[in-house]
Amino acid sequence: MDKKQEKKQSKQDENPEVKQDENPEVKQDENVTLSEVEQKELEIALLKEQVETAQAEASEMKNQMLRNRADLENTRKRLIRDKEDAVKYANSSLIKDLLEPLDDFSRALEAAESTEDYTKVHDGVVMVNSQIFGILERNWGLERIEATDKEFNPEEHEACMVVTDDSLEHEMVLEEFSSGYKLHGRVLRPAKVKVGKPNI
Image 1 (cartoon, one colour):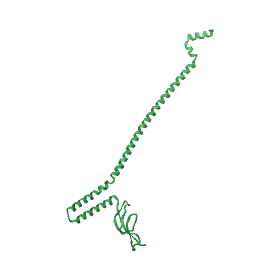
Image 2 (cartoon, rainbow, N blue to C red):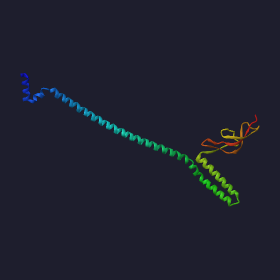
Image 3 (cartoon, helix red, strand yellow):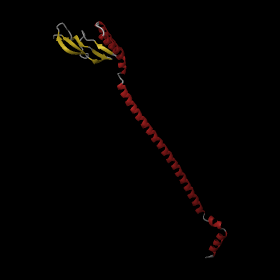
C-alpha cells in the first residue's frame, strides 16, 4: 500500500461519515428508487380501488338487470292473464243485459202452463222479443236491415229466390225470409230475401 492510500484509509477510519459522503450518487439512487416504488404502490392501490368500484357497479348493474327481467316477465304474464280474462268475460255485459228479458220469458212460459188464454202468452213473448231487441239496439249497436220493398243490395241482402217481374225497373226485395242485422254499421248477417228483377 502506498502512502496516499494509507492516508485515505486512515481518514476513513477516523471519520466513517466521510466514506458515505464520498459516494452521494448511491444515496440519491436509493432515494429515487424508493420514490418510484412508493409511486408504483400508490398507482397499484388506486387501480385496486378502481377495480373494486367497477366490480361493485357491475354487480349492481347485474342485479338491476335481473330485477328488470323479472319485472318484464311478471308484466308479460299479467298481460296474458288480462287478455285471457278479456276474452273469457267479453260477453258478460251482454249476458247481464239479457237476464231480465230471460226472466220475463220464463214467467211467460209459466203463465202458458196455467192458462188457456194464449193471448197473454203471445203478448208476453212479443214483450220479451221487444225487450231483447231494444237492449241489443241501445246498448250494443245492433240494427235490423231494412229489406222488403227496398232495392236489392247484395252487401245487405242474400237472394234465396229470384223471380222476374215486368213491372220492375230495378231488382227489388219482394219478401224477407229472415231478418238481417248490422253491428255498429257492419253487416253481421245479411237478410235472406226473395228478389224480383226486371225482365230484360
